[in-house]
Amino acid sequence: MKTYTINPLRRMLLVGAAAALAAPVVRAQAYPSRPIKLILPNSPGSSVDKVSRALAVPLSSILGQPVVVENMAGSGGVIGLQQILRAPKDGYTVGIVSSNYTVLPSLYNLSFDPRADFVPVAVTVGGPFVLVVNPSVPARTLAEFVALAKSRSAGKSLTFGSPGVGSSFHLSGELLSVVANASLLHVPYKGNNTFTTDLLGGQLDCGFLTPNVAVPFLKAGKLRALAVTTPTRSDLLPQVPTIAESGFADYSMEGWQAMVVAKGTPDDVMQRLNNAMNTVLKMPDVARAIAEDGHRIVGGSIAQATDWFAKDFDRVGKLAKTIGLKPPT
Image 1 (cartoon, rainbow, N blue to C red):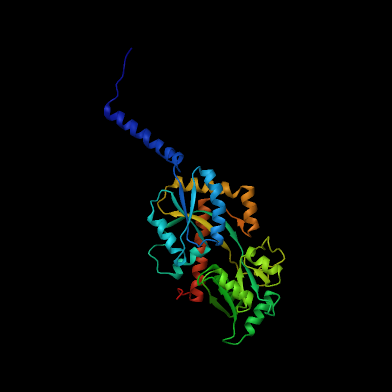
Image 2: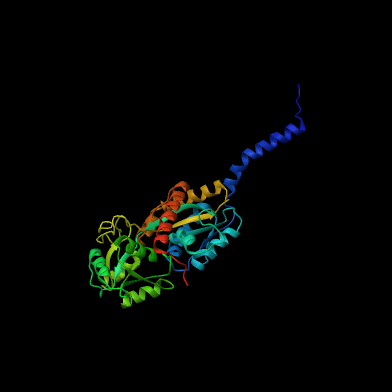
């Protein structure tokens, strides 16, 4: 029988080519092989914290590795984002950001670029805010509220509170002021609880809350709902009209959350995370819990998440310029 020998160099090239072809498959199958750190640039107890922890448990099951949630609040989320950028770009350190993320370039002098240095893996949930007033405010509709705001003289504007400058709650009020051409005075607080307490106590005229937070106060008659900020009504408050259908068609403001990774993370790893997150979001128990919390499921591809971010950066950037947004002091 005739035998054939393979030139050593040819053998090396063949082995190398086979390894190169197999590498992406091996890497995709191997990831994840150890726990994943999920950084939240938010404080414990926040909406982002609550939703992210609810998603982390089934996400761990789908990925076959623990997803360890770590809160890293501070400087509007900048501290947590910097930690993600410092970590190896291998998919083992990921983050969940909220709609406040797209205001960062307009608010801070950053050492990184939120547009270019991160890649959105998937937008997880979205949802409206609801404009509420203290019962002492003599307005039962948005039209009456705007008329009241316009009737106030300089120095006596209706006040609205928020957890801080640049927060989605703050921008919701500023956008209403712009589209309605009515002066509203923003009063920034540090955290949700303080401004909500003052709103209930009548020290503030109005504010924007998430529906799940607002519902108990509305049922108790401690606050009155005028409108929600998204183009469609909230399932938790179906009787409350949207700001758009109340006469301001250009108004739209939605709170959202999304998973992000540092740019340079391998494409197959990002796709694995995207697939896993979409699987979790389709679980009936997860969908039910998210709906009960006043959010809607978004999900979708990496490309769709990237488009979502681009549009929100543009929208928020334009609003920031219009209102002359300045960093908190």
